[in-house]
Structures are given as structure tokens and as C-alpha cells.
Image (cartoon, rainbow, N blue to C red):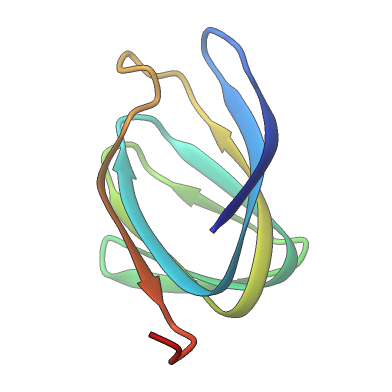
Length: 101
């Protein structure tokens, strides 16, 4: 996973990250809005998977465990909503999907 530059205020965080043949799972106390800039991202939240393409947006509700899977490549912009825990991440896991383990 590659994280690009971002900006953080007292209430919001905006940034960019990319995945290449990788899946990332995490949970946040805040709502998260993700816009795919390039590629294809499979987002699973509350047992529902959405396939999101460049130009499309997906929202992950606060407190939900979300899995972001890029079978090939995905670059996305994220916006984190207000949070009382400093935008902390829990239940984080990363998985290599390339077969090169």
C-alpha cells in the first residue's frame, strides 16, 4: 500500500493512497468517503461488496469493518469525517494478492 500526501484539519482528513494486487482491511470510528481515481477497487462493508471504478465514490459508515481489494491496481482519494479518537485505525490487516508471497 502506498500513501500519498494529504491534509488534516481538526475535523477532516483528506488524502490519497493506492493498492497494487493487495487487499487492506480496517475499521474507523469516523465515516469515510472514497473516490477511485484510477483502476478498480472492490470494497466490502457489512457483507456487501461494491466494485468501484475510476470516477465513482463509495461511502463506508463509521464503525464498519471495510475491506479494500485491488485485484490489479487502484488509486483513490479518501475523506475521513469528524472523529473523537484522532482518526485511529483498528482491526487493520494487509493481504498480498499477487501470488508472490
